[in-house]
Image (cartoon, rainbow, N blue to C red; front, side, top):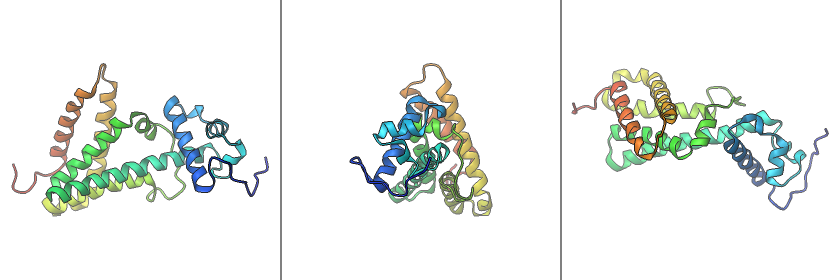
Length: 213
C-alpha cells in the first residue's frame, strides 16, 4: 500500500486533533474488549469515521498505536501522583502527608479507571525512546521523587535507597490492588482494606517521621 504524503483534513478533525481522536478510539476499543487482538487499524478508522489509510499518517502500525495509548495513560498517572504530593505538601507542609497522598492517588487512579489500569499493565509495551526516558519511567520517577523527599526530611543517610524503595512501594501497591480485584464480592466499602494495607506498607518501608512513634 502506498501511503499518501498529504491528506485533505476530514470534517471530524485534522492534524493533532485527528491524531487524538484516533488515540481515544483505540483506548475505547481496548477498554471495552480487554483484548489487544480486538484492535486493528481498520476498526479504529471505522470508530473515528475515516479511511484506514488515514490512520497510517499518524501511526506506523498497531504496535505503535498501542504503545502511544499506553504512553498517554502512564503520563496521566505520573502527573496525578506528582500533583497529589504537591497539593498535600502545600496544604500541611508534612512529608508523610505528601507520600501518603501519592499512594492514595495511585489507589484512586486504579479504582476509578479499572479497565484502563488493567490495560496499562497487561499489554505489551514497546517504548519508542530509551527505557530510562519513557512515560512508564516517569511513573517510577514520581515514586522515587516522593520517597526521596521523605527520606531527605526524615532519614537523609538513606537517600541512596530512594529508587529501590520506590520500586518496592509501587510493586507492592500494584500487587495489593490486583489481589483485591480478584476477591469475590469486592465493593466500594472494601476499599478500607486497601487503605489499611497501604498504611501498613508505608510504615514498614519508610522510617518513622522524626518526632513521631
